[in-house]
Length: 176
Image (cartoon, rainbow, N blue to C red; front, side):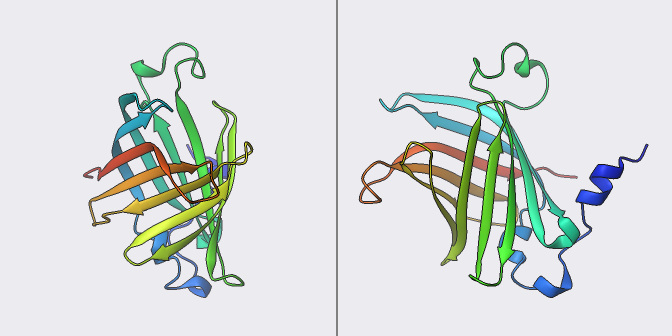
């Protein structure tokens, strides 16, 4: 059965008018299994599994993803917000006017919303934004290979002088 909305949203690949620039995030298109480590303010670690799916969107001018922690299935029973579950999406659009990516993260479960700007920094990708509470947020993709990467979420309460890791995902590409 065809879903008209998903057919209209999705794309088979990058748009020719954005060629080359779409590769920054386009290399993540596909499905990934996650080992998620979340750190509280006092440094306590919670470790869980997750899943992350990336796809071409909006005529190939955007990359959209969905991350789900814990993964779909029996672990997601009960009150999602009370269980610190996450099921959100990121829309990443390359903007030629600023030669960077405009990024919108939305998690309706935890009611978290964040706008960021993303750019390549050497072999890594770094996204910067400001949370509603005024803290700076830095999300980065590091140690990127064809089949794995490390994603790190960090916060700064002192305008970027120091950063505290609050989340890390070790991602492994799912085999087809």
